[in-house]
Each structure stands twice: as structure tokens, then as C-alpha cells.
Length: 525
Image (cartoon, rainbow, N blue to C red; front, side):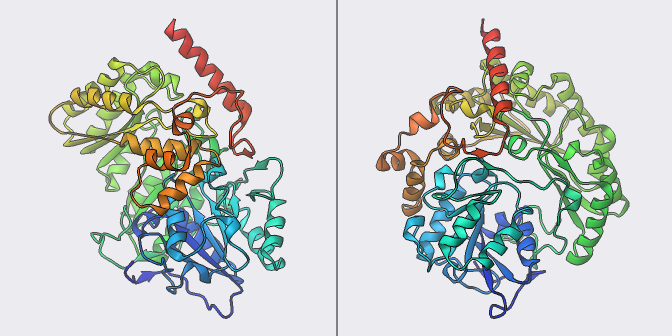
């Protein structure tokens, strides 16, 4: 990665700071600096005087080096990585490979850094990387960072540090932890540290390294989502939902813009529209003449007043996620919404000044039929008639996630997904609509890494060591039964590889799944 000039980069003295942490993002700079996670972890670690934290992006550089000092991974005491998507597993092991660090934890003695992994993906199922990661952080970072640093400083051997962490809340240490590991979380966002002096590159927004949403202040409005859709990892693994208050948001915005020198704010969170102060904070941003953006808006809460505020903030594309074009299927997956209400939201959006619409749908949903698939095209056509200049339809296969009610479901077959997408595409209007789907092969890989057991780590290792390796070929090469893990339905009585991690309420998951099964069977009679 080329050297960048950044505002708010933190550079500490290596000679005076006893603990050195490499904060590794398993992807490029642009992706890693787009969200809040890297910014938050960088801020939390560097708040302490006894440790320094430098960022490392796995972008193909050999070896990967930190942005701040150009040091390689082996120079640090701890490699801390955050993984928010499954392919990040491969990126992480690829980064170790390119650094000359043994991939398997049993091959790394005291001379190598401790490898710590956190993020929503390993929090839901760490077993895939059990043979590679020394310590998993299960849940939010804020409650455990001080404990991590203090254990490192108090213990003077790698084994002593791992043993100590294995007995502490929020840490899963393969080979040491016994029994269940409970997820930890910050109980109140207003009391949690939030970075205001966020790092931004001093480059043009058209530069390919610029974060996706430009040079912006990232504000976490909500953590988690209280809607509990059956497929949604963010809902079930981030319980309970927590909202930031208006006074806190306004204070952070004022300080963040002052310390960063930007005029744009990104409002972040899976359940942003559930925050009772959303309209008020948008009105405040408009009153200050600031640009701002919001993620997907919940359709049962958005009204014309909120839409007009968002348009005044400079956003011209509204993102909606119906997920299915059938009221029955939406109800079945835990996201009930009437067709008339979806149409009403689109009409209000156009009247409010939105020019473009982005829609998210899924394929391979329970209860889905050809009419449901063709309904995606009918819905897009109805929206196009309203006058939007562009409608972008993004279609993703349903990928069952651990710690959700759909963890017992299989992935739909490649053949079905390909045929279903053809049906959807043929039903689309010829103008103003763009449609794309995640490659079924990529969905297969994500499902394997989501639902896999310890043996799937061998697939990750093989793919990390053989660039551009096909997941089917990799699975076959290391003797992993991909079809059993990905395409076979599970019973609620079957043991689950991730059962020792209590991220979600297992009883609630099972009750939701049984209710879903009853409804599906009733409909099929």
C-alpha cells in the first residue's frame, strides 16, 4: 500500500510503550477505513498509555506492514483482527502467510505474537479458526480491552496469558477454555467511548483509496436491531438493541467535525430507524447545513418528514430491504410488511426528492415459489413507473447463519439459485432497472465458513495457501464434506459446532424455528 498522509493518525514511541498491538483488517485500506470498527478499536487501544496500536491492512503487500511505522506483524506483541465477513478468514491466514508467521497456533511458540480474533463472524462461530487463532474475543470490545491489556502486562509467558484469559468473561481460548463462553456487551452506548478524532486520509474523494462514503464522520446511532428477523445475524448476536441519545449524538457530531475538519456525517447501525431520536438528529444536521447519509431504513417507521430531511442532507438514493416480493414469505422469515406499505414508502420517497432506489432481496427463502420470484420484477416495475431515474436491485442467496433461527436450514442448491435468478431477471422491466446477484459459488463459500466445524479450517488454510482456489476443489483436497455442512438440513437436536458460545438465546432460537416450521407446514397442507 502506498504511504498516505492522514489526519489524526496516532504515532507512539516504541521504546516507551511496553505493549504493541497490530490491528489487522483482512482486506484493503478503502474497505477497512469505511466503517467504524477499525476506528473504534484503534481509539480504544490507543487510549491507554501502556500500549500502542498500529493498523495493518491485508491488501496483497508482501509482507503486510503497519500504516504508522511500516513494521511487519512479527514485530508486535499481539495481532488483533476484526472479522465482519466470512472471506476475511482467508485474508487473515493469507496475511500470516505473507508475513512468514506459521498459520497454526500449535506451530507458533513464545517468539510469535498472540493472535486475537473478534468481530461478528467469529463471535457467532469461532470453531472454524480454532486451530489458527490463540484467543477469540466474544462480543463487544469495550468491556474487555482493559482486561486484555492488564493480563498481558501481569503475565510474562504466552501460556500464562492464555490460561488467564481463558478464565475471564468474553474470551474463548482454544485448548484452555472449558464450558460455555458468554458474549459480553456494552450495556449503554451513551456511556461507551466513541472516537471523535477519526483517522481520515488527506486525499481526493475520487482517489481509489478513499473510504466508500468519502471523508466523513462515522456516528454509531444504534447497536444491534430489535426486529429479530430469522435470518439476521446482527439482530441475534448483538442483543439487546442499544440506542444513542440525542444529546450524546449532537455532542459527538460537534466534536467530531471540529477534530476531523469534514462536513459530512454517516449515521451507522443495523437498526438506525428504530432510534427515537433519528428524526431529531437529522433535523439538527440539516440546521447546520451538513451532508449526511443513512443506511437501509425500516419501512414501517419512515415517513415523508424524515425522507425530506434525508434529502436535504444530500442523500439521493434511498435503500430499502423488502427481502421478498411475497407478504407470506416476508412474514415467514420474520419480516412482516404489507405490499401496500412498501409501495407507499416508495411513493413518499419519490415525492420527497429521492432520485434513485436501491432494493435488497433474497433468493432461496422458505416458502418461495415462481410467483414470488416474478414478484420482484413486478415490484421493480411499479417503482420504475413512479419516475425514479435508477433502480438498483441487489439479490443475495439466503445464507444460514449460526446463532439465528435459520441456523438449522441448508443453503439452496447452486442449480436452484441460478434458475431462480434467471426467473427474476426475465421478469424485470427493460429500462431504469439494474439487477445483480451474489455468485452462488461465493454464497457456497460463505455458508461453509458460517456453518462449518473445526475441519473447515483446513479449507480456509488451503485456500489461503493457493490463491484463487475454488471452494469445492479446496474442500475435496482436504477431505471436508461440503455438501453435508452446507446443503443438509439439521435437526434442532443435532449438536452444533458453536454451541459452547452463548451469543444468542438458544431457547429463543429454537422456539422461533419451531414456530417457523409449524407455519410452513400449515401453508403446505
